[in-house]
Amino acid sequence: MRIAIVAESFLPLMNGVTHSILRVLEHLQERGDEVMVIAPSTSDTAVSDVVNGAFVHRLPSVPLAGYTNVRVALGGVSRVKRILADYAPDVVHLASPFVLGWRAVQAAYQLGIPTVAIYQTEVPSYAARYGLPMLENWAWNRVDNIHLRADRTLVPSTFALNQLRGRGILRVGMWRRGVDTARFSPTKRSTAWRASVAPHGERIIGYVGRLAVEKQVEDLAVLADLPGTRLVIVGDGPQRAALEAALPNAFFTGFLGGEELAQVVAGLDLFVHPGEFETFCQTIQEAMASGVPVVATGRGGPLDLVENSRTGWLYEPGDLAQLRGYVQDLVGDDAKRRAFGTAALASVQGRTWPVLSAQLVQHYEAVIAGEALVEPAAAPSPVQAPGLQAPGLQAPGLQAGLKPAEPATISVTSSKGLPA
Image (cartoon, rainbow, N blue to C red):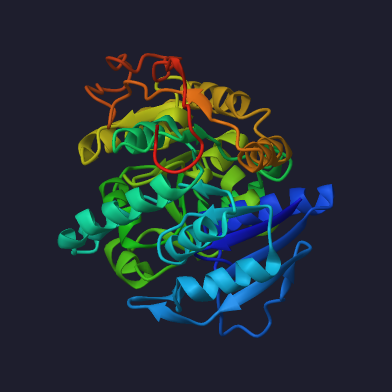
């Protein structure tokens, strides 16, 4: 198979989009497929033009204002169309499309090349967080237009599935994310690292991710004075200086990767994630694979990942008192925390990248063959976790082991053009 992957962001920038692309490239390389990645240019001359067997075609780009390591590709539809026409792929994979992806979906449509779009970033909701609420409707219109034009859209969570189907985008299927359970494992827990961070035996509460406005890391200030705890912030980004000022007692590691990251995650007693705009949240899966229970906001991807009162707690978005209460519940009860951690580890078994990448290839083959998508219809799941109660009590609608309602199955009768 000949595949073109169009990436809004790629190496050297590491984020959820890049991570997913790298894992998919590994799988495609093992299969012997031919792959080209189209991505924004970079000023880093050390970055190779070949990654996991795929040639990387760089387009001229400019840095995003206020977020200089994120670059936006320049040029119009015609430039992307020429690249795709010369390469002649069997399918175009649109990785979190928005700017470059919008040009690519139009170019592929004009050339008659089938497309699979991966909805991975809730870009429109970022607008309000960045003080630009007037752009939110425009951004949603862009998202709608991309995914209505794509032959198939894949989403990572029930929340995202409902979100897009609620906007009239019907050719949507589920494609979750894999996790490396060999790399992220309780066996990586290091007593030496723990002692260096919490020399008096404090319980270690950790966050892992970009330090950016949309991640709402500043909400963790509500945990800063919890007795007998140490807050660890893993990651880097434009908000780092502001967060270091707001959380003076927290331990900031900076960006970590590889085995160093796996060791730190396994060394946590509790993982917290306050961001409300996660379509999936890969770092939650990595914490769970490390045997670490989770407290996360009850919106978006975490609704599928965290089983309330079993693998962690979900709190009402914006209810920081509830966040603090759930954290206190777990750091103060060693037996419960261990039980939640054991259940978290069990919940991610079998979610390997080879399995998930093989599923993606099946989607490629289906759109190439012009097959209609048969997928679950939108399910009545909450936009946020409602009515969450104090620790120790069951949350209405989110009792232990309860997941969002399983949707019924429908058949979409057309895989081309607008929904039938």
